[in-house]
Length: 286
Image (cartoon, rainbow, N blue to C red; front, side, top):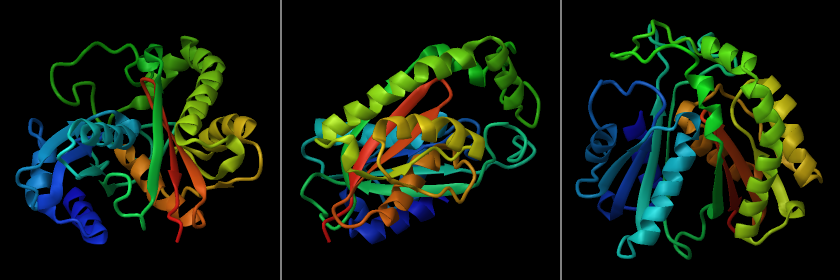
């Protein structure tokens, strides 16, 4: 799936595979083999023979982090002009139950890809103006719970049971602490991203939130964001389940369709651990 997405993104961008200096692939779940580099496979099958393949594994924030890595790589590698970011996840049985393994989301299979260039190149495409992240590692217990470390993949049984770890997270008081401290941290994150883009909250026309349950989106994220942004921005509809690492790239596609020429949008993404991302984008002028 990632190869198909990569080829589609390259074709849409007009960039040849030989022009890609770096491919960053993000994923949440099993990639088909237990010990290999999916980024190298995707690069090879996409015709990117000498570009640097990099793997990123940070669950639902993976796509955002992969884009961040690609952007930083371009800054550090002035002789390169473009990078490719891909994501792909297939939440298949028996290892994962897309409907009941997690009580905060249902999961959809997907792949996504984005070609990232330098400012001034490809002015007809969506512009990434800034991207900031914030972390609180005291929340890492949410995805781990109290089970002992295992020595083999899926060593805690199948299908994966994230609900058990979530229960520990809530009963330990860590969830309540995260909510209490998370809103100010989220507001600070958004403001840092807006300052980096040189805009103010009132300039935001569209907002994309994580692809979680309606309760999480409408009951937690939306009120927290609305408290800071105000106004009447468009909130991008969520028409899929959680895409794993693909949430952020999927939201890039959807928010572009929600913006008129020249308008600004923000994307909020997060993952258990906890790391949150806020990115500011602008639709092309025409």
